[in-house]
Length: 208
Image (cartoon, rainbow, N blue to C red):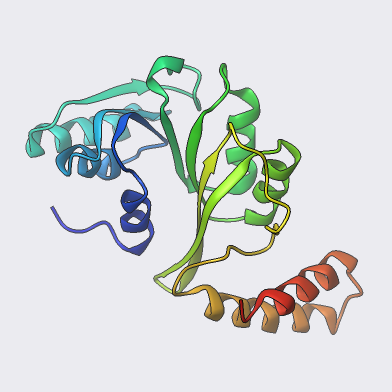
C-alpha cells in the first residue's frame, strides 16, 4: 500500500491505542485499514452512504488481511454508540460535519475532523457546544491547506483557542500568510466586519 498523503498521514498519527474507530464517509477505506495494520486500533468500522465505496474498502481490507466492518450509513445513523470510541470525519465540508454531529443518535466522546471547507464554521460550532479541541494542525497537500482537529467532547472549549486557525503544523505560517493576502484583496472591495475580525486574529497569532 502507498502512503496516505500529508492529510491522512497526520490523521493516522493521532490514532493511538483506540479500542474502536469509526470512519465516516470512508470512501476507499485506506485510513481505517492502515490504522488496523499499524495496530493503532483494535477494531475499525467504515461507514459510507455509497455501497460502491464500501465495496472498495472491503476489497482493500481483504487484500491487506485485516478485519474491517462496513455499514451503509448516512452519517452516524447506523453506528452503535459502543463502537464510537473515536469518530473520524474527513473528506467533506465543515457544514456537513456539523450536520452529522447534530443528527448523531448518541453523544460523541472523541473525534478527528478534517474539514475541506468552512473550517471556521465548524470551530465556531464546537465552541458553542463547549467541545475541547486538543490538537488543531494545519497541513498542506496538493497546494491546499487542511486543518486537522482532534476533539474531546467530554472536556470544555479552551478560551485561548480561536475559530480561524489552529495552533500547530508546519504549514500554519504559510496558510496565515496566504489567507491574509486573500483577506486584504477582499477588503479592498468590501467592508466585511467578519473578515476584519479574522484579519486581526490571524495577525495577532501569526508568530505564536
